[in-house]
Length: 440
Image (cartoon, one colour):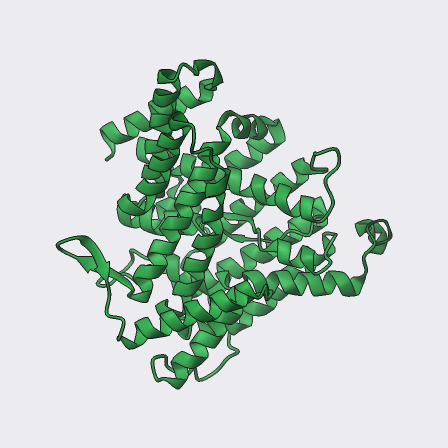
């Protein structure tokens, strides 16, 4: 095992890799409870039965997809990078595709499955890197920031801090409400722990908020902590039965959005974590093909099990900071996700006020990409700004991407910078124009 993971060469040990794997798990364990809540749409009042997914099944799918993805990454690519269903992509799945477009979650899962298969093909053929390079970095960063605002907006809604207002569309909620106060407590506690650089700050913030909620009588105390693993029956293999639903322009936009967001989320995470761990060589990522394949394969596995796109987690950097240098730490993280399967009774404790702080903090972290956009160039600022602002205001990640990608060639051509526009951008321009003509 030491020889396979090159412990001696990388200056690490079993103990260090174990601590790193546990640190990474604690940093991303919040997804076990946030993902089922988002995909089930449990925070939406008066939701018709069957629109959202089964929480128990999604919990199990999330844990297994994270375990399998992390195992593949650890054993095949040998990187200290863990995977799980991605934040942002799950929000797009639930709020944009299912609620916004009216597409069933079964069909949406088929879209995730197809996007994963396409990813595998693009990775093996080398096309994936070419497409990544075709889209300007400013738009990539704008998409990340826009998703961050969108996720934070959902968090503020779930907390009751932002509510509907017929006169101004949105307004400040009742800050004396018990659940809203609980969410505010969670935000403050989580912010303090994150500012103190406490590994797993988001997870521990949720934990403390849930305890305070139970003490205050706002959350029902669970009768047990450990229980049977929830059945996958409601979601397992459903994607295969709905593959025929993908042959429409609307589903094409959905699949392209899954592809696009995961494209850059994965690339950025891999490069960022590998660079932090000192694994980059000549500014290149060794075994990049295997790492990208691991991510693609995890998406396919997750879709079959019953969850949105599985992707590499930037929280892996916490494990690297704790000393992780090899794929063995990812294997350890995978083991903890499998162990977490037996803690499903805690799903009832993780209510909307408990998860709201996690959504808001993740949103803050994602919005940091704003600093990488050159706002002094108007032709860049326009499509970037419209991409970012349209996501929360239209309640749709896909719409934000579409607006930004339509305006990009317009402003660049006007600024006489036509040579900088990649042909793929013209193709995307035409596709998104058709999207607004026929689907919106």
